[in-house]
Image 1 (tube, rainbow, N blue to C red):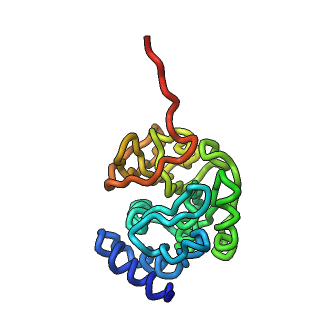
Image 2: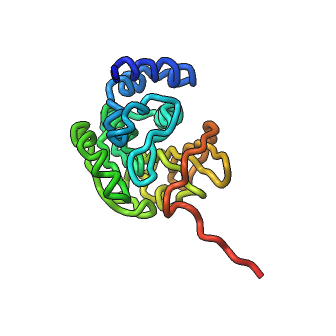
Length: 209
């Protein structure tokens, strides 16, 4: 399979047509080998309009959706970034000049994506998704959805830092952008999306009598 040609087709047919106009981001998407973040026997599906399996039930976010999240973040070179359950997003952020850490909870996923992340200059760490590693981040992004406002992720942002994620409580969800100010957080809706909700990122059920 000609992955270079498939990558260009992805950007032309799934990214540019969905209002992702930042040329630096488009160039990064053209440069990062998305197929290296899929299970080896699923590499052929890396550029399709479908979620590509990594390992253990984890999938890559659709190209359109991850591109729109990254576009909303308006990444600047030198920024400190954390990609939680977002290995492909981590590599694209690194290509844009960010200093990136990729956090995964499942070692089976890390086994698949670690070589590509190392080649991209991304550091990796293993920890549950509800325990973000480090603090003072300018950027946090996730390719998985969360069931509610991820306060523990927001608390890991620096003032002026941005979080892009999909919030999902049912069959559909919304991509959202949070920005941390000195006195709180702002929130902006971005687009409809429905990636799988990450393990540990659904609020516990509350009982009432």
